[in-house]
Length: 92
Image (cartoon, rainbow, N blue to C red; front, side, top):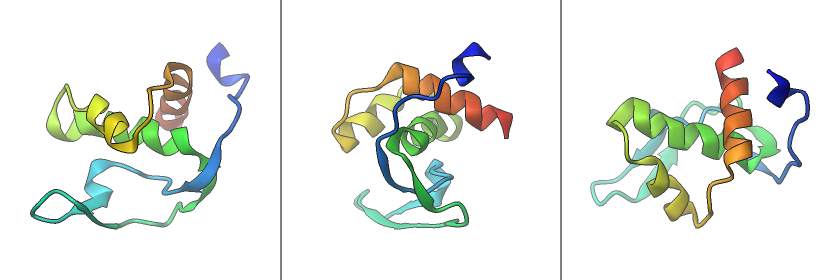
């Protein structure tokens, strides 16, 4: 739990707060349509959402989809932030 003592520098954006795959709706072509379950919507580090959104692809679709999230977002994975926010998620 030493990793939770020092939070990473935050890159603040509007965050969903529960950015799991089932909370993102896509149309038949695979394009984004809407988000659901916005009860935790607020301002936070973009990695708080990206770490969980990518992780949820494993839970919902199986291994091998995490990179697709980062590629679609146009960002390289930040392993320290991913680890930090996933540890926080597991504490809830």
